[in-house]
Image (tube, rainbow, N blue to C red):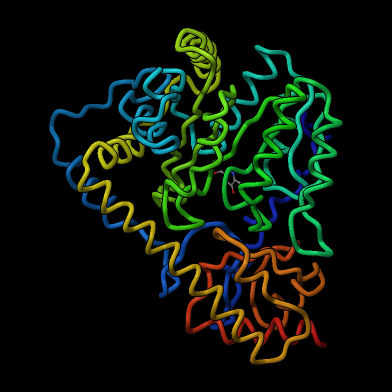
Amino acid sequence: TSVFSNVQTAPSIEVFALTEQFKKDSNPNKVNLTVGAYRTEECKPWVLPVVKTVEAQLAADDTLDKEYLPVTGLPDFCASAVAVCFGEGHPVLLSQRADGIQALGGTGALRLGYDFLRCILGRDTIYVSKPTWGNHKGIAQQCGYPNVREYRYWLASGRCLDEQGMLEDLTAAPEGSVIVLHGVAHNPTGCDPTPEQWEKILAVIKQRNLFPLIDLAYQGFASGDLDRDGRVPRLFADHNMEFFVAQSFSKNFGLYNERVGNLAIVTQSAEITGRVKSQVRNIIRKTWSNPPSHGARVVATVLRNPALAAEWRENIKRMAERIVLMRQMLFQKLRALGTPGNWQHITDQIGMFSYTGLSAAQAEYLRTNYAIYIMSDGRINMSGLTSKTVDRVAQAMHEAVTK
Ligand code: PLP
């Protein structure tokens, strides 16, 4: 008998399982609204024009080689990534209290942050929002956190933030707990705290001595403006907090499969930041040893060149604007159909996703009757819609709700 005979098949990963099923679906009008990747008006993946320009430059550059990068990544990339997060010239950058470490996407940055807090600081309790991105809890379990908990976040009845519930749960969290926060464009709800609510959240975190880990996977995607979407890490920095930010360049650079992320570390002094960085460096050495160079070179080249950086900002704006347009079109269509319910949340929510409020049964109805694929929690990727498909999707939603 095999040594593996008792190994059970692991549960499937919903988002990828649905995408596989979608690929096999023969319906010519099929629509995939599951995976969190941007699509153009032609429903195609988009390689950003600025990325293509830089990739051509890099391909022609004979000075580049395939030597190992430093364990903590390409220095130019790390420096420019933290500058995107906090804004050029921010005091945490000038004082060198903030520094960056290249990671394998936002996921890798979260993993490094979690690992450091668990293994080096011995933190045993971590809180994620309820609901949250499907991987937040799993990474914590993989890192061996004994206590993986949730704080209340979404108030289904009001389709808004459960401010009171969130503040109560944070207040009750044991001192030193790690609190994972979505820096902008909460996934899956598309609902962020207001600036006033952020002030309250920050005050509890400070008072209760909790450790904030800000997941910044969608900077630029909510408002189309990197600075506006960077307000939360800047608020924490302005309050002299110590915290981590897990940055992803998958979405805002469209570099999904290049695995470009950064763990930004902010502490009380440049000297402490250096010590923390050295420990994270040794975690990397024992995990993936060295990061890949291509995506980081693309990002660093763009960010180090003002003309290219301006072009990138325009590319982001274009993606964010198309998503807002799709929100408006879907909302208007549901209104025109007289679909029962208040669909205002579709235009109120921000970022790539809409948390429609459709049930798992309604999601299945869309899939089996219309070949429209959405997540079972009702989350849809707004950029998966186009002006050609939005009517059919609205019609199907209408039927799913009224049948
Ligand atoms: N955090 C959130 C909230 C996300 O939605 C995602 C990706 O979907 C990530 C992190 C991870 O991004 P990456 O693909 O860069 O690992």
